[in-house]
Image (cartoon, rainbow, N blue to C red; front, side, top):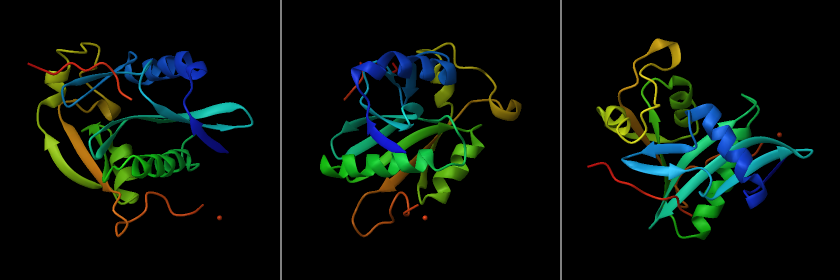
Length: 178
């Protein structure tokens, strides 16, 4: 398996994959619309087959993970992409990775916690506000749980901090909420 930089040849695939998983090629986090067609990213592939996508945005010394999709679960794909992103982000002077997931996405919450990420905030009602920018966000998510809140996680990239993954044996158009 190889993790590589997302290229222009991947853009349509990335937009279709994000649309399949998020209802459109637009992702909203913390009142900002991110567009999958233009965000930088990483692709994990095996023998030419694309198996996952990570898209991100760097602002100052923080790198936001906007999209993380692994097409095969429990094979280390997400872990490998996050590990590569930590290298990219460090090289660009970032001190941390951060991301938003919704309150219904319990599998993602367990995944990030298991990798050493810390829950740093619950943004109550944020998804209700995000629907003003992206009405196609469903009312209910996994297991029928109402999707209402954003949960923010952070991972330190300081050398003394834990690594994203132990060894295995720019920027979209922005719009702020009013």
